[in-house]
Length: 161
Image (cartoon, rainbow, N blue to C red; front, side, top):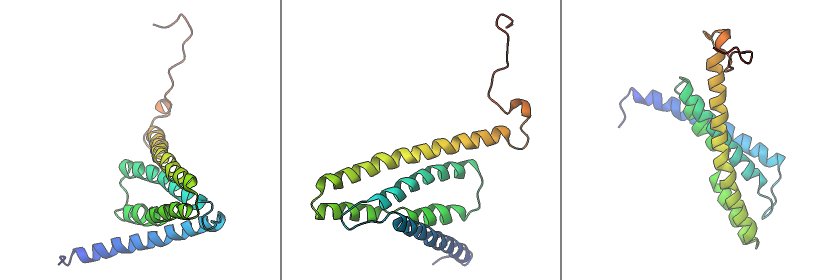
């Protein structure tokens, strides 16, 4: 049994996850409407949401490390929105659909392509976010304009000391 003090906190976390999940699932449905998916055919909607979701997960992870976000941001966005947006179950169902329609080559290609695109997407998202965070720290409040750029002072050749 939970202590009474934890019940309201857990209720807020659950509500944040549920709201985020509804938003993420709605976004995924929107992608499926924008990129129609024929039975046993193209798997572009699932590939798109999973790779894009991985890119955003990379960015989000870095921003969580760099800032002191509200305690409900991770459950809302990380678990809810991104969990609802990306879809491992559809990934496997799509691959199974390709196998069921006699397309083993495309099933294997899809499974491999998802991994080969998703992992670099997480890494790229994290790298881009780290660059943004570093730039904002250099030019943020309290940064002097003289130190805002990582450039060496200009010198005339032969006058270096």
